[in-house]
Length: 264
Image (cartoon, rainbow, N blue to C red):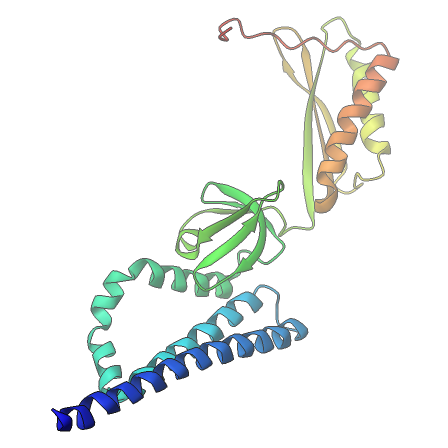
């Protein structure tokens, strides 16, 4: 009994204690190293889109190395341990195929670059500003400050609408007036409004045309090109200005027709 205690239990207990200490110290060191790497990466000229991915990858690699070291301290030969991992790779791949798909998707997103940090996108049924592309997930922030985590595998295999990739965008409005109104006057007023707005780009030139004969109104379509960041400011400005000018020019805008089938 004493021989067993001396030859097996006591050495194992020592190794176990050393392994626990190594694990705790290692995790603490990894945390500090990750912070240090994070600071250096933030200071570097590396693309902002790559920074979160690099920091997540460094942290993950260090934790894998720590796990191998702890297993080695417990008496398991690291070569055998790695061989077991390699032999079980297929099973692990099946078990974590979703995670592997997300990792591969993250790499694909960084290589193809359909999105970058700071872009406003719509994908996988969600929309928001890209805050980070991590190892497994891409983080979006919505205009009302919600945070959305989308698996990279989903993003890599779905259609993405990127609203920020181009410097300019086209704004569009439809304004309806009564059939009794002077259509030439309406067109002149709308053209004056859109051409005089400071946010509207002159090239391509704005578009103002009659677009539809509705049941209770004649509709005019107005289009204008604007810098992407000014789109919504222009949109709401024009809506307000048109209403005020139509009131001033005594141009009637018909009331919206009520849906008679709408539940009360």
